[in-house]
Length: 145
Image (tube, rainbow, N blue to C red; front, top):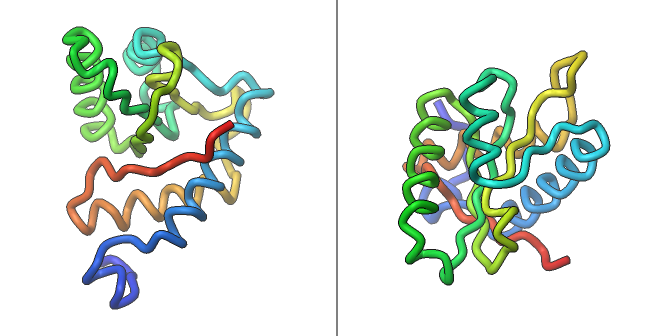
């Protein structure tokens, strides 16, 4: 059962909540990067998912209209999305012209412990709620940096 407000169940996810999740994703990346828990790049992400899918806690895909004609990239995106859905790995999509090496970013558990960041809990709840609304790949606009 999903716990959502009436507005969320009728009209989707509020923009305020999406902003909160966007900030949570920033917090997760800021925390994961110094720990060496970020894998960037489509091919590197595919290798990491193949080697240790149980260690991946989040997958971020950047949608880039300029790259839509790249068939190999689109095939990798489709395979990564299917793999993540099959293995219960939360996926977020972010529109915008990201550099090529950031089309796919994975966040993994730190080497010694399981991830206990409160920001990850926010993102996980958001992903669960989106799946309840049949939005398997909701789009999150991340702030420009």
